[in-house]
Length: 385
Image 1: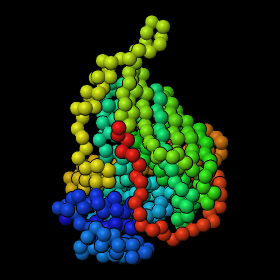
Image 2: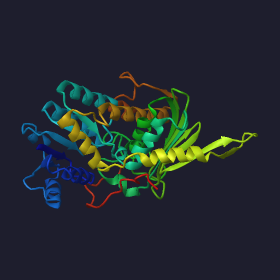
Image 3: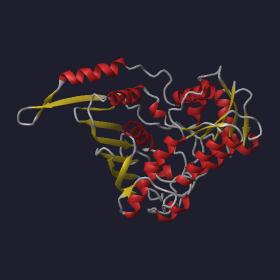
Image 4: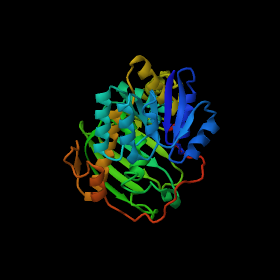
């Protein structure tokens, strides 16, 4: 029975707790940590975590032989917490984004390598049937070479969303909607496409004058094999619609699921290729459904890796790759320059201090609240029809 600790009792912690509770014969939550101990205790009471203790300082757990921790705290705290626990002998599942800088991400990767412990970064959207089937279809190459990818990460957040004490600052949140909302869709795109070689980006803050960071960004990408891409990240889009569209030479597939294939008439204009559409649809239909969805699926993957040595679907390097692309967006949007990958330790945007110094500060954060009333949050669409 693996002993689990939840670090941070904010809104996202409930998804982690529920995920671990799906595997009661394999793990037990023994502690919930939060700087507000009453929040930790509320989570324990809410989920009936018998025997779990509420703790205000995570360092109290470092000597207790915890097997696995979920880090659900603000991004700027991820690196020290994750490194401390890995050095103490615990495996780590850390919420997105992996860290608030590439320097911190590299510290986490080195700690994982030195300790021999697993480091997984939350990307729960991978663990859904639509995403797994989309990945399977793309891997089949039935669409031909990919020529264009479109990522629309459309969300809406009210002005007061950025009143929370750590949000809306380059120092503590590390960025705006690109880092903390589009991160999941960027992860999925990289999982399916691989990394781009260069990008050009713009960003703005159009509706949240209580935040330093962006509330919308747009990025154009070029991939190694010549494909182009577009990423739009937003918290100003009403309706909170998200989609990923992959245009192949022979066909188009997307999440939410849609398949379209075309052939050329004598004059070059399109006509439907129903046979290829049926072939791709049949392939998708035959791929298995995901049993444990979202956070539960990722927790199952981590538990399997601990118990059997099977590979992580989302490891620390995957988390860093996603962060590197996002940092590249911030660099290009702040400097107006084209960014070429990879970004090395000598780059001005490699450290949190460098980002704080060089990234555009749209507004000063003037309103701060310690905590919002506990209420439900939206985790985005499941990208199915």
